[in-house]
Length: 90
Image 1: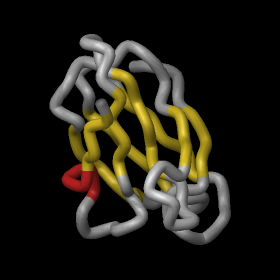
Image 2 (image 1 turned 90 degrees about the horizontal axis):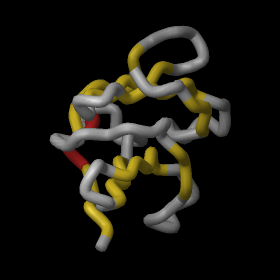
Image 3 (image 1 turned 180 degrees about the horizontal axis):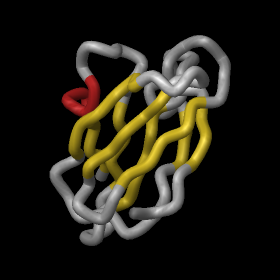
Image 4 (image 1 turned 180 degrees about the vertical axis):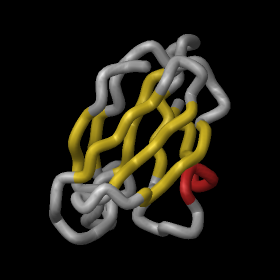
């Protein structure tokens, strides 16, 4: 497991803990401990997630860099989508 990080990803402007393991499985919790998102980025990840508003929608995306050097941004603000909204950046 990589070290967890905090970021405001679910639209309520509160810090949400997020973690991703080396197999690329991610888990984002809300401040009450409920699961906000769970899924996979389908890549090996050796670092903690970071947060940035890469889509310029006012909500942070969870950003990781894979073992091949690709950046993957995951929009977890849509609770129904989880990691399926992964955006692979060049």
